[in-house]
Image (cartoon, rainbow over all chains, first blue to last red; front, side, top):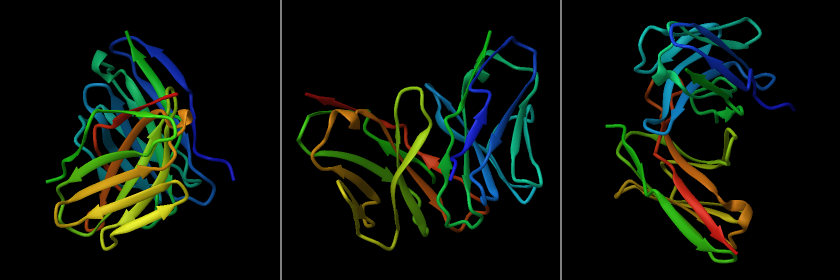
Length: 113
Length: 113
């Protein structure tokens, strides 16, 4: 069974631009979560989607948004990019339930210049 | 509280055992996870334990949980150079809506030949 895939793997953007990252979960998984990893703040939870609905949200500004499609694929969008948005963005999928284990993708490395 | 804390660095000789420690603060029912991250990669799930268990063993990995002290440890037997990586512990509160993992800052493990 294929793992979690994320595209693109690397992105370079400039301040003020917007970016969309994509995540395809493991087949059959219906929950997709997003995390931001930076050297300063570590791994922080962004949001989780389940059945096309946001089920949980972390403490990030409204510039960070996401959505989930009927095939469980998810996208996250960051508008008006700031230098501090440079990070590794990780996506994780799980079957559905709250007790289900999350499996992570390789991440998208975003650099904002 | 949701703080998860880990020591920053561990150096170990090849063939020795490694012990990585983690403390968590949430007192409700929770799952506790260990993930491994190699350079440039996402998070690889190593093992997990539910908060009503004391110990779990999986091949070279042993997880010990001290609920009274809210202390979690991961022991890697016969440590190999391929075990050099950053190890993260994470907790998930069952009572919380959705799948949100709270991560520690990570322990960098260096295995010397």
